[in-house]
Length: 290
Image (tube, rainbow, N blue to C red; front, top):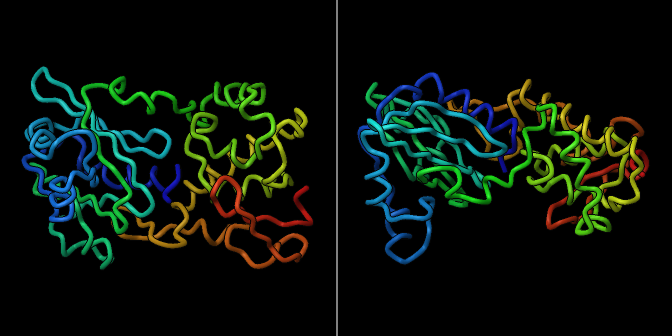
């Protein structure tokens, strides 16, 4: 699943070509149409396809931002404003091309689901191999309450204190620390890959209960989460399966991973072990992490 660094690079890739452009038309794939006809919310969530087109076509993309793992498009048409909120799911991605054939990765080229035709003759294409992603068109962020629950961005000054405040909540006192830092209400944008890597750098076993961490460990873990997310952005994200930039290129953070999908620990040489925590495979070194 694309996490904060990957989504940040997708946003950076489409912004120069899409920001300031009018959306002249919206085209849906047969899979999206069939899903809606069968009563399933395939990609386009919360409204009919025709209503989505009404509130998207002829709107100008005024701003594009990343919030946690979401890409947010701020649209305007005269005095009317709308917001597109998109989550890439497990294997979604946006591509900016002049024609579908310009999408270099076959799987993404074949599994396009929404095409936004722009006034500059570029196509903003949403592709999703597994169709777990979503795009919502809302009048305001308040119309999507769960979005407002997201923690501050981890690079903001207030993010540390926000994260620390969750250790006092009864709901997390006896939960694994890995489960806590995966919650986007606690830390925005930290998914499985970067959580595994941060816990390794902090020397903390992913299954330790939150209340067992002392104050120093709590703060240290947050700083390592921030560090690995920064490195993820620096190296263009982690391409271990489907993730691609908006131009089809891959990231290189996978070359700098210590435990996630690794066989042996680069520090002590022990075999990396895997344990399911909060429904996710947690990779860790049993020697370095206690």
